[in-house]
Length: 117
Image: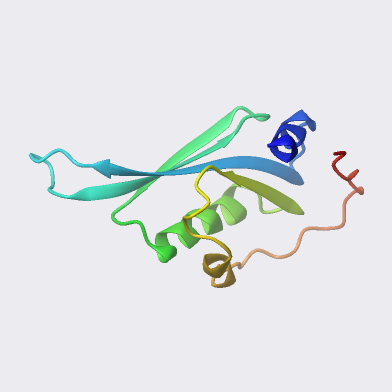
């Protein structure tokens, strides 16, 4: 928890973004469509930005597509994106191995000071 609070204490920087990611299953209204969907909410508190994506299912592919859009559309020049998740048992490093990154690497920027414990 201390590390997360330290992330929020850093100033907003487009090359070093901190994004909160929450995944929530959603029960759909019976009149519209039976079943459930999955909602991904992404928030960057320091920049005042938020985005919600809804997918049909909670799958590794949906997770990687949401992260891929975050990297390619919102932060194509970022050197590092810290993603803060509240569920430790959801998609993790295995899903990231298949992340289809097509963005080119960002140009070198100024060094960032390490987090203080």
